Amino acid sequence: MFSEKIRQLTLLLEKQELEAPNGIVSVQLYSELFAAYLYRNDLCNARFLWKRVPPSVKAGHAELEQMYKVYQCLWNNDTAGFYKVINHDWTKHVSELMFELKDKIQQETINLIGRAYSSIFENVFAEMTNQTPDMIDELCKNQNWEIVDGPHPRLILPKHPAADKSLVVSSEDQLQKLTDFVSFLEN
Picture 1: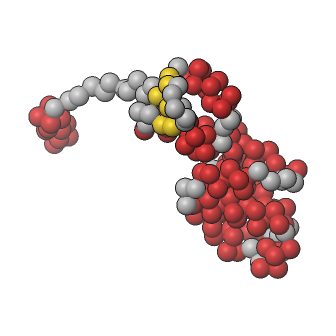
Picture 2: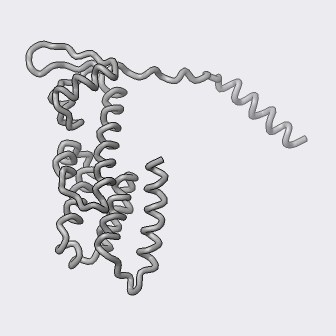
């Protein structure tokens, strides 16, 4: 699974950073570790990494600065800004991670909209998910969501996923089970 691969990569890069002679590592290691933290939504570690990167390294590498902009958008829940700054010509060693991050955020946002909204305007949905009208039509068809045509913009009606019907146990039943368990332990 990709998430497990990223977890292993993160551990390896953190170890390399700790064991680096004089505490100095390559820009590539910093950018890979930063991208891995972003993918894992480990924004606290991403922030501390940014603080550890020497100012001379930050200033000389536009890619690190662009990753920091991605981090800021994630930190501030700015999805529209996120899609603007993630569209960058990333170097080979981080391009897959950044592509996967964009895809992951897009899918999480779609799932959240499906659970949280009973209706949403198409233009708002497009801004939140970075999708074109054709992509929205396809997505709504696949999700079995309804699109209501009318005055511009169209209205999307997400269908909420079926909720888990958990077995409801009364407080008295729980208290009785706890009492029985404690009594068993005492005897």
